[in-house]
Each structure stands twice: as structure tokens, then as C-alpha cells.
Image (cartoon, rainbow, N blue to C red):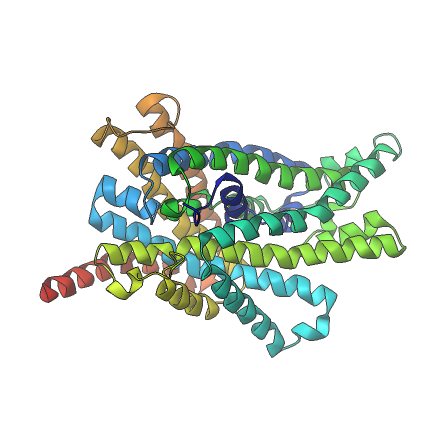
Length: 442
């Protein structure tokens, strides 16, 4: 029990699996303007995050197994679909995990540009991968506890930014600050803004894969999901509203612009410089915190597959801290090879593959309600079976939209959707190959 995570560390880890602070919102503001961005950040959690967190709360409490969402789908739909869930999640992770070392280097370059010139940028990205792998080898409790500290350090500058932004807005000319909410973008690009917003609000199910490393998971998971949902929404909406009422033009926002906004709000003296640097340091913390927490989540999937003899048994071996060390090391190698991909391509492929795996989880929620009505569920999605079905409607609609929005993106010389589909169809092929090899070994 002493090695297991309690509520607060799970909340900290979940926060980084989903958000990692306001970093990443800049493109939503720059593409949509303040008013539309604020509307997206208010509406999408209701349609996307809330149903997903409720689904995770029910299934993580009812089936608190290591491997999380893989076990839910396998139990509801059988081994074939369980493997597809694992495959989709792991392939999505290649594109998702490459984003966070990029974020780290982006903000580090603001502090020390010469440190990230040329090949040095790649070395820093790989340093993030190696450092987080070593951190993860210490165990889930160490990652969760560290996430709480990183959370406080990352958001402290934003607490100051929010206070200064609202203070400036309150002392501006009548209506001058709030006028920024009404526009600021001549030609908004809503499709990209919505896709980035979805990416900033996804990942609630990732915390489920460490269920056996959480103290009293039946009670802890539902509480952690709801608390984390509130923290994520607040840490997105409040900074956006603060810079809006302060009158900073929306068109100035692109990836990394929070540092410039902090300098403007802090003024021309040392105070503005200090606040800007603090926000930049927070950006590096965000990249590390997200990569570290998600590494803990994703590396439990090969462990769960090995327990089902779908991967070599070496993946099921753990350290004294309960960490599947081979999975950590091999996943780190795979993610390290993807650090050179661009943000737009990464987010498109990530959304498509993650969306497909999320749909399987909502299907598992409904199937388990029908298949195992007597299963102990300390927490339930409200509304009975109809409520379970309705919970998946909003996320499904947004996933379809994300696929449509990615229609013009290209990857490896082909449309991004075709590339994602090619990766997805490899899942069934690999599953049957694994089954054939396993039968020969019997």
C-alpha cells in the first residue's frame, strides 16, 4: 500500500496527462479570437471532457485493472478488439509523445537560444525522453508526487498573470478591456482552433492504465476525474480571460506567445522581464510534466498485453517499485525517434487514432452495462443505459469533425487520414500474426 498513489498525486498526474497548463492554447486564440476561443473552452469540456471523465470514472471503478482501457475493451468486446484498443493507443502515443519534448525546447530557446541551435535542439528533446524514463523507473508514486510539485511550479506564474491581467482590465477605459473578447481575428480558422482545443482536452482515459498502482481505485478514480476536470477548465479559461480583458491583441498569439503576454502585462521594468521568464520556465515544466505522466500511462499497455501472452513475457517483468522496465525503455526509444515531426502533422494523426480508441471505450461502457449488469460500479454515468449511450454522442461527433478537419493534412506523402487508416489496419494483421505465433508455441 505504501507504494501506491493517493488522490492528490493521481489528480496531479491526470492533470498533466490531459492539460499541462495553458500552454497550447495560443493557437486557439490566434486562430479563433478571444470570444470564439472562450466559447470553445467553455463548450467543448461539456461535450467532450465531461462525458469522457464520467466514462472513465465508471469503468476505472468497475474494472480497476492494470492496463485500464485495454482491459475494459477486452472484457466487453473480446481479445481482438482489446488488442485493437491497445494498438490504436500505442500508435497514437508515438505522435502524441513527440509533442512534449518539442514544447520543452520551444520554451528553452526563449531563455537561451544558443542552447537549442541546430543539433542541440534534438539533444535536448532526447534528454527529456531519457530523464523521464529514469524518473518513471522509480515508480508510479514518484511520478504522481512529482506531478503535484510540477503543477504548483508551472501554474504559479499564471496566478500572477491572471491577477495582473484582471487588474489592468478593471482600470482600463470603460469597455476597453472587454472589447477584445468580441473579435481581433479578421479571418478565423475555426477548424484548426477546434482541433487544437480537442487535443488540449483529451487524455482522461490515460490515468486508468495504472489502476493497480492507485490506492482504493474504486473510490479514488471518480473523484480524481471530476477534480481534474475542474482544474483543467479553470487553468485554461482564467488566463485567456485575463489577457483578453487586459487588451492584448488576439492576433499576436501563436505557439509560445504566453511569455510575450507576461512581459506586456508586467511592464517594461525588471518585473515584466521576471514574469516573462517565469512563464517561459513554466513552459519547460509543462513539456516535462506531460511527457513524464503519459510515459507512466502508456508503458502499462505492453505490460497488460504481455500478461495476456500477446507480447513476450519479458514485458511483464517489473522492478521492485512495480514498474515494467522493458516497456519503459522500448517505448522511450520509439518516442525518441519521433521527436522531429511537426506540430500540425502530429496533432492531426494523434486526434484520429486517439479518437478511434476512445470510441471503443464508449462502446465498452454500453456493452458492459448490458453484458454485466450486476458488475459492482461504485460510480455510474447518470441516466441508466440511455445515459451511457448518450455519453458517447458528443465525443463521437467531435471525432468525426476532427477527421474532416484533417482532410488536407499530409503525412509520408499521403493524406493524413489515409496514413492514420493504414496504421489502424495494421492492428488486425498484427493480432492474427501474434495468435499464429502463440499457437505454434503451445
